[in-house]
Amino acid sequence: MPRESFYPDTNEPHIHLHRGGATFTDVGHNHRTLVRGSLVYRGTVQEVIADLQNRGDNRSVQIAQYIQANLA
Image (cartoon, rainbow, N blue to C red):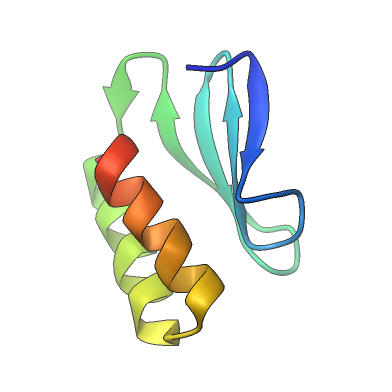
């Protein structure tokens, strides 16, 4: 995992990739932990993916696909 980065960028929503894991940051700066260390919060990951896919906008779908491919 990279030292610290944001996918796709720092605008919300985004995924914050950091040394401790990965956090999803939604609009309004609400955070949900997806990965902490080697522990993947599978229930949270699936909830976030479903929510993003239901939004239907390109950015949300792109983030959902990234989570599925890299964090799930």
